[in-house]
Length: 255
Image 1 (cartoon, rainbow, N blue to C red):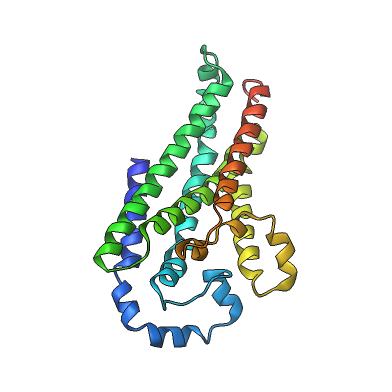
Image 2 (image 1 turned 90 degrees about the horizontal axis):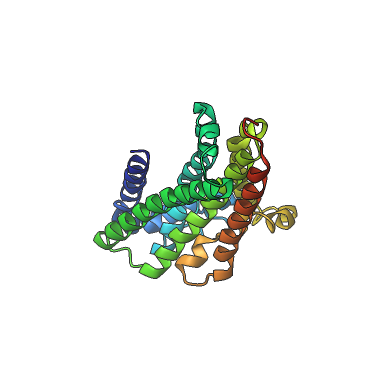
């Protein structure tokens, strides 16, 4: 039910945002004129280094869906999952019982991580399918492949923050309380620094090592994206998973 309601909610979000595209398209000139008066910093928070406008379907999708709201929702989901996969067993007192059975800790942790990744994948597919269906109905003429890649990149970005939460939880009970907060802080900091780096010069160097720098949905929707970036996001999630596996194997039962 948790997965179902998240999938339903994310699909509803896509429908609500895209169903009004014809209205935005018909009033694009007036709306872009109003948006032009916004401060550069405000524009960057909704589009980063991309174009904050609704002049084209690509710009509309980037600013309304893919740059902020979709990765934000998926990140919230991913962090919740990552912080609960192990801690739920610990809170209910069943983790020790589970570990006492003939199953390796590595296998248990891998199964937990796979389950969490599957939930995120199901919700992401729900977002993709609803977006494609409504996009066809309201004539958002953007390459289906580019929309698929943009959704995949949003899922990869969100998975990384969930992996941070999952890894911290795997360190032990003392670190468990900080897992969700640390992952959320990292996500918010990454988003703000990378977004504002387009207008604040001294933020460019720290933004180079933050996940949002390699997301770039505007480039994806226009077909100018480097595949290495999304592969890098998945690679870092895998590295964090290996770190979690290593530390979880060293933990004593009840610690």
